[in-house]
Length: 208
Image 1 (tube, helix red, strand yellow):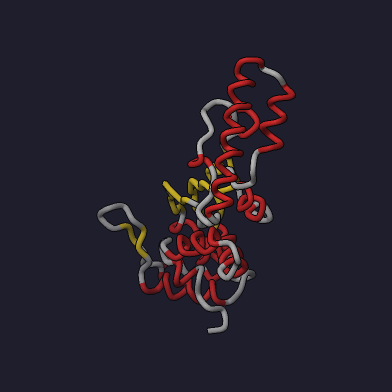
Image 2 (cartoon, rainbow, N blue to C red; image 1 turned 90 degrees about the vertical axis):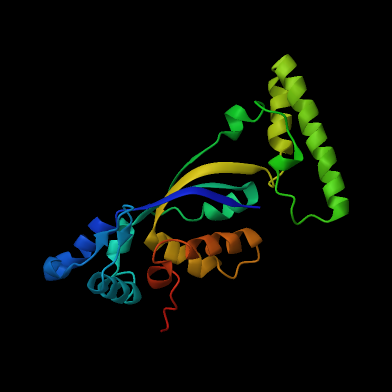
């Protein structure tokens, strides 16, 4: 299970001005903002943006200036893979260490959508045990019980992080993960397709 919510894409205008700096071609810029305040590429700017994007990472430095911010809720096993992307990414997460006992445990706190029925039944017993430990911890404040919770917690536990990255990072993620075994990566790549000008600047086939 993965949810991507409350996202924003920022800085197209400044990025394209930077893309035109090497040739001093600012006068050819024809992009604008529509009546809703949305950035719209003009034909000249879109042609340049696409050519630079397709020319490779050395030529599309301007895409590192296009920023995306999004709230992602995903299981810990997915975050372990996401954390391999350390360049041009920033994230603030909800705190497992500090807030794990602040609310009751329930099955909805975990990604169980691909579990077989027998495994799901077993998972319910783990959730029940975690809740038992949580109540005991709230009563005793025992560090040993707190460690029981932390070390028993399955990697299917869902965590929310507010993440920031850029279009160049998304190119790398998309190409590396679009055929991944985890369904969460397919959902993430489907979300990339919904971003402004993704087909032109992120998900294009580099062989074309």
